[in-house]
Length: 298
Image (cartoon, rainbow, N blue to C red; front, side, top):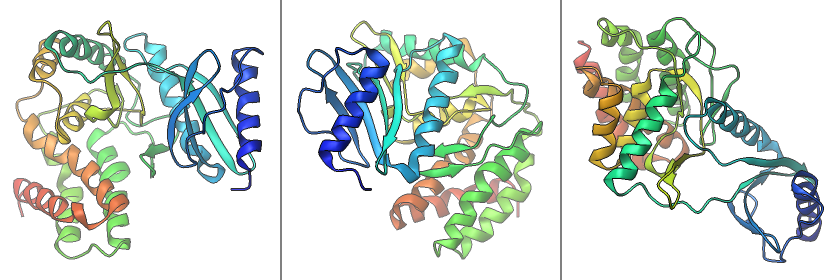
């Protein structure tokens, strides 16, 4: 990173001005740190900005792509993209500022569920995506496939197990992981998922609501896949209100053996957390891989 704070602020202000009009001026408050995100105050409006080293700018490009894909469905709101730019080794993405609140009351939860179900009804021709993207900071491969179980084995689980091995997490995790990857199609013998448009990283921190109850999703890692993968992820770190899941099931029922596949889908995210944040997720990853291996037979 080479840009000095004054130069960065000037370049950011200019890029926003080019996007929204010549009357935009920064209010003079400190910018979010590089590698962080937060409010950017103009003299008469607020915006939201993410800043990161330019070498990681592809992550911002992927986010723009995902936000555009979701917005194009007209099913659920996303923050509007204002501008993507960079200068002096710093990249940024500026989005509209939305005053969001957690999904808490039943009416808001049902509204969010109905909007998500509508998005999931938007399908692609194949599983995967038009480009590779990211799940958090981790590259996410999206080579398209006509076979969902093969896609999830080769484009999701196997790369995460390989990263875990490279990080020193071998032993039973790798043995169980290899077995899960090899036998994964057995979990789909009676299930034929459709290639729904997925958010891809739908924990409860990536969905919120406006004051009028309108749902908003953000920070996507989009691809076409089994819609139950989004629902599974939404349950992983605390979950959403019961009314959300009941409302979703009224729109799109879940399969009878969803609970087993939920474990499979969430293993991907736990492995990703293990690879990003370290050993605090190791026991959970090992337990999930072992349980899946047992469910699939030795």
